[in-house]
Structures are given as structure tokens and as C-alpha cells.
Amino acid sequence: MKKHILVFLSNGIPFGLIMVGWDYFDGLGFNLKKFLFLSIFFGLWMTVMLHYINQVDGKSKPKTNSKSPDS
Image (cartoon, rainbow, N blue to C red; front, side, top):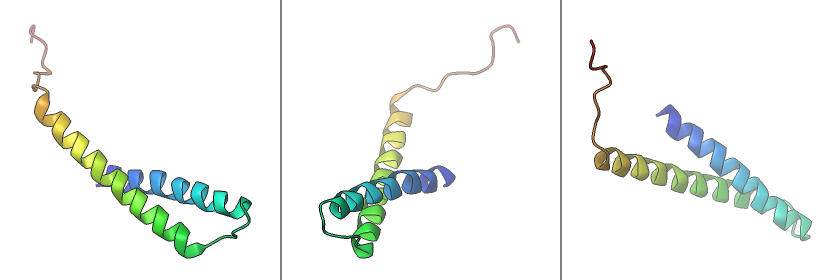
């Protein structure tokens, strides 16, 4: 769960800042609603994709035994 929250925050907030910053420098000003919308939905999308990729990746790779053959 910590990984999902970290992905949500580390992807959503920078994406929202970049997109709202782009609008600000184009002369549209800072829009808090747009920042929150972009941050939340992009963060959620990245979290869902991370979960899906980890789920598919975990099923496709065979599990290996971590014990050494000598022990």
C-alpha cells in the first residue's frame, strides 16, 4: 500500500504542477481546480497501471527458490 501512495504522490503532483505551470506561462493563470483534477486522476491512473503491471509481471515469471543448492 505504501508503494501505491508513493506512486500516486510522486507522479500525480509533478504532472499537475507541470500542466498548470504550462497554462500559467501561457497567460491563463493558476487554476487550483485544474491542478487538483490533473494531479488526482493522473496519480490514480499511474497507481492502477503499476498495480496491473505488477500483477501481470508476477504471474508470468516463474518463482525461483532463493535457497542455495549447498544448504
